[in-house]
Length: 115
Length: 110
Image (cartoon, rainbow over all chains, first blue to last red; front, top):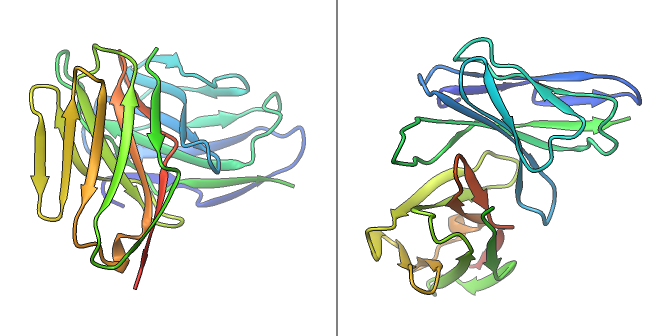
């Protein structure tokens, strides 16, 4: 999976249930990101983390939570407060440099459906 | 924050023709502009990128141009092939992350 692994590939959530999406990378990247993809809306940033034990809200953080206890791992929890969670979720990572930006490496995604 | 607009949203071309996708950005501090290709049901993959100190970059049939003054950049694909059919996303840097355009669905007609 090119060094960044998301699981599961498909996930079904019942109303009122919290679910956690896994993202693991072995690229030694400092920065990790979660994006949500809906048809016609591109990629919207949920949360990002530039270093272990620190993370920041993105544009659509409401109803989501994250943790960054290890450099390799950045799990995303979709809580019951997220009213419209059905979407394709993409995790990404990148090297971090104070002056230079780098392209992201994406995971293969998790498709979440509310049932 | 950064705002990235991308046009067109859909594009159909005959095999062998060229395709051009255009993006504009709002933050004059943006200095890195990658392009991603996403095939159906798969992850976005970086196909080419350009930094703000360069006006044009080529990689075989793909090229990207950047006009910093006008704050726009474009992806050019020449001699298109059916396997170029995908959704293409442009992006520009914000303070700490990338901001993405809404995507262009390119269809290459054999």
